[in-house]
Image (cartoon, rainbow, N blue to C red):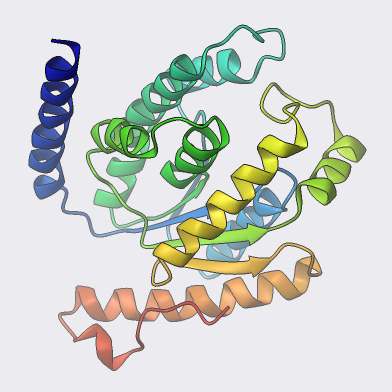
Length: 252
């Protein structure tokens, strides 16, 4: 009986998600930054936001978990180090709830206005941290997040790769660790390997970068790739075949 209900629930989620995916029609560009804690993604996303502002390209800079009043309330629950009793399933659903509000209240409206949306973490993070990191059913985590986002997928994701040891040292040098950051290095190693697996599966979307490189060197690569992405996006909006621009693969 439980198995039958679980199967029915999964089909319900997929059916409703598919319906919502078909009605997503946006003019903007959705770019996410991912990577292990301490990888420098937050620094790089702010640098790209500043670059877009100088080029007068309309942009929304946001983050997860959080990004709206409701989502920020959920973020506080998720990251509070005192909530050590939080169950893995609770964590998955709280992240998805925060994301559902964020997508509908902030991300989709900005994309519909034709803006570039820069988001610090998105669904890839849930696959890596809650799916592989916590050892949960990865496909179930995907289904939950498909329902939460309506199937919204970034145009480009920048993955800054870094060892858990280096990331931990960087974080200890700058601030106190939150509930997720405090988890053991073995957990963060699973997360890192999950991000690399996601890159292998999505090389047209995900750009792999070395988080050990100097900040300016890293940003130069991101800027070069984004400029190509922006040109291709503009051509697509004008109805030009995007293959005339490039193959969509990040140069790394």
